[in-house]
Length: 496
Image (tube, rainbow, N blue to C red; front, side):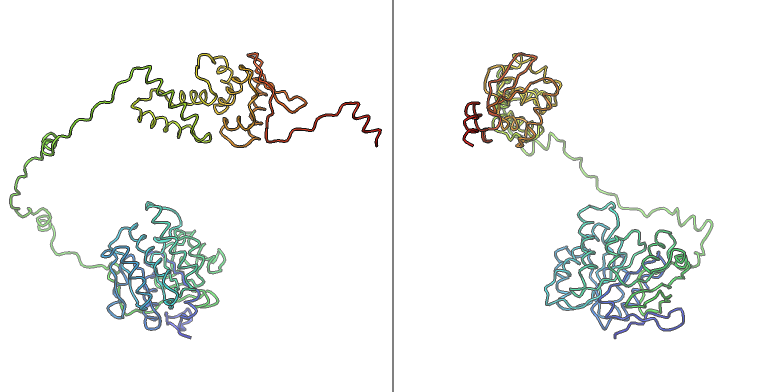
């Protein structure tokens, strides 16, 4: 067993981490700012530096100093493109190099995109390069947030997906995730839940203490112990650490972070008038700046570039020609467009067709819907059908085309429209919806349906006194067998 000395437990005995077990079970470190998380991660990295490959994702640049004492290579992410980051990640896996990816020079969204690209390339490395490696991610709540923040959704999804792959599926690829966070409540639960080893440091918020106690298998009343931990003390639990929660004090480290905790230093000796003179001293004289010429005006720029030739005006059409062009465009849409297309899409089609003809559309969406319904019903003169249109005012807008088609067939004495024709005018392919629509209109009292013994349907409009000719409602449906006369029925019975 390869062990890493992390310090002393509550009984003064050495507290060790089983490195091989850690590679298989992953580690979660939690603690408020100043609780000693970075110190703990540094102790873990220093203790395992010669035994396993280490890959550190460092958002604050705290672990770059590892390169001074060990063979780690510091990578400044701000100096490389995402393509270079992905290429470096593949080479890191191939050559088993220990690296620190410093994200300090990037904004939060840039850090998330860079970490997602880097982790994704590590995860997608060829199978022959699946060597064991510790992947340490400090401030993991930045890369796997529990809720969306002010960053772009695509960056958050990519970063969260990469962290989830690391913790959920990385073990088979040799990647052992070691993540540290200030608050468990800010870390995505599906990322935190994949760790089997826990080191819980000092925290004060109730929600974080309760989640930490749940992960450690402690009762809620025991969660107060997490608030009383000193700096550098952690409660440990997991197969790579111990089977029951144990208090561990982390030992000393060899390297130091570039940014440490603030220390008290003496104030400057200058004071009173001397300090005031230092603050309000005159700025050194600057050489006079050359006066730039005023920028050219818009007219001068246009003249310098050469004014383009004016666009000729479109030929003007009189009102009658414009109305005829709009009516022709609506008729074309009624004939060619998909019946199930929305009115907004068809209205944009009308605008496009009119622009192609050089016509300005002077009708709004409501007028377009009414005229399109008339065109689909085969009605040209709106004034001639004013009574039928007035009857349809009590119906939903989408029922206007099939109702007007019924009215037109009834006035002309034509065959009753089939269910398929009515369904197309209703904007559907379902015969059942068409029949339910007819039932709704009949309940309104606007139509009366009648089906004769031969299965043919006729529809009347009692308000207008119009009736369609009988016709089969569904031509594809087989006709019922002819009825036998009473004489034929008696003859058949006598034979039996």
